[in-house]
Amino acid sequence: MNIKNNEKQRDEKKSTPIFSFIIILILIVILVLGLYFFHFHEGFAKDIPNRDYSGLIKDSHAIFGQFGDFFGGVLNPILTAVNILLLVYFNKEILDLTIKQQENTENNHYLSEDKEQIFKLIENHRHILLSIKVSPPLQKDKDEDETDRNGNLTHRGIDAFWYFRAMIATGYTIHNKKNPNDYENNLKEAYDYIYNTKQQKQYFGHYFRNLFHVFKFIESSRFNKDEQKEYAEIVRAQLSYLELHFLFLNCLIDEGSEFKRYVKKFELLKELQEFEFNINSKIDPIKIDQIVENWKE
Image (cartoon, rainbow, N blue to C red; front, side, top):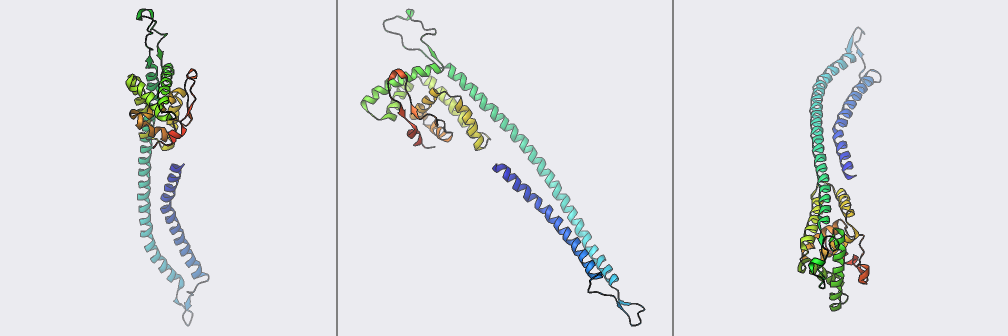
């Protein structure tokens, strides 16, 4: 809306010189006609005859003719100059319009490229999600040959997040016993243990680095702020409710702290008011909306 208003204001400013020229020409014509009618119909310059009325001492028509010659001699170069100025002005307008159209064409091309790149990044993110897999450790009462590891014990994609959240619940319970009610730090320690100690950064690191790059690309794109939020909303819509849980967790650790600004800027966690654990963990949900609210953009 602001862009359209600015363009309208520029168009109004451009039309001002033309309007001024037209007004000046109209005023000149009115002035000449006014002088003519005033002079010959109501005028102050009457014909003055000589004493025997055989001729005129003062011929108003001749005087006005002389005035007309003088006025025409002055007006013609003025009109010529005006015509030249108008010609230059309109040529400049045509050139500006051509340049503007070319810029709009190039801008639309770049916007189209940015849009295409965003959807490519979304598709790439989906492939990264599908590549995540985790296999629970072998049970001690079974040797490796007796254990089926080709599907039954391997969690892939979004299912892997369910398994990781169960691990988060276990770690959170341990830390909560040591520091009751320190919800944010207990969640951070539980996730940091999985990310670093259990060496799952190969999955989480790749996953969140790519997701971070998606929002960074949107921010640096040529889209205006409203369009950036719109595309960020499209990306956020691709994230499951469970993935939003881990986006919150990833922002708690040092490796993911830079993601907070995009979480705040694009309101990525606006629908995640509570951190919920798996049902069988029997842990009450944790309110996190205030934690997110305190993050700096």
